[in-house]
Image (cartoon, rainbow, N blue to C red; front, top):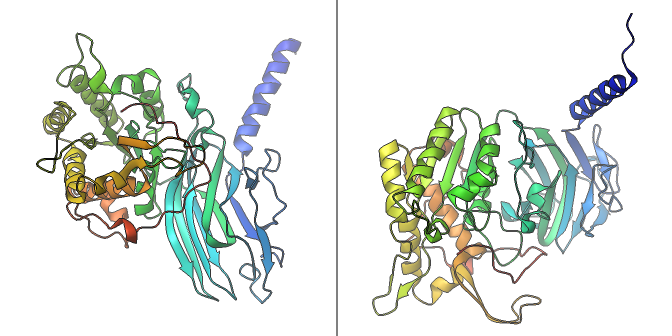
Length: 445
């Protein structure tokens, strides 16, 4: 038998090892939190379990919780970890969709929790349990990485390189006046419908308070079975989304039955080349996104750009500052026979309903010293705060229903109808601030 060269043997061995490692990456977990008895089949998690790549799970970013043991016959619900401050728990996982089930509650006391994933994606609004009562909630969450199966990788901006969205783990943020976390289960969700988001700073998962966008609020409205894969990034145009290989990345993983939601315009408007313009490059590229999604058996959905807050104070009307771009998007949707969600129209209604002054409460308008390190007032008429982003996500939900998209059957039962002309009162809406904040305005306008 002919002996293979040593170099070839080493390379073959390395390839086999890498293949085995990829195949053996763990994708299912069952965690029992607390210091009491451990439920069969579960892994106990104590407050001392700090995240490390070697263990693959643990409390993260220098946050922790306290263990409480109530005893009782139910090993899973007899103990928990708790905190009155936000804490992060991370699990190392490969790219894909996962069903994540959390159990919250206390045999002897109350609990109050909100839950976000990754870069502040809202999953669960403030939820309370009475003594002896528990709530078990399941969410389908998408994890992504930079690698493209056809070769190369997504080109990230410097600001993205520290984002939870692009690392190699799932991070959950537990936030509330008294989180009582008893159990967490994670399993692959290979058959989930994935909603891919392509857009700019009005869509992206914003990492830091007080910035937010509708793409990070929309997961809250879906039942298990739908994952939102947010590939948007601040400052992008249709062209730069393609140039940074984000469209290539989406097309490498999108499958029949999935959706591609497309919202651009704010930054495209500033492109001034001879072939640029609403009815030139913008229209051509929008049609390309639509056709490529259709080739993959996915459903493209076009969204007009969210309006900027731009009031004529004499009339109380919000004036369009996006030129022909909303009209161009409407025309492409009609010509290509695809669903249109007219966010430009709905956000205009929203701002006008709130009024000249109160509409500032939906955007990043804050006096100096509202947030740590914020020495100057923030007055941004494009970028939303969490309340505004949440209201616009509800507009997107209404668009899903109005277009009779198959996604509508996955909307959570507690999703009420919404009319942007009658927005939710800010005083009745609760948002638990995440630990991270930044006074630097996101790219784009």
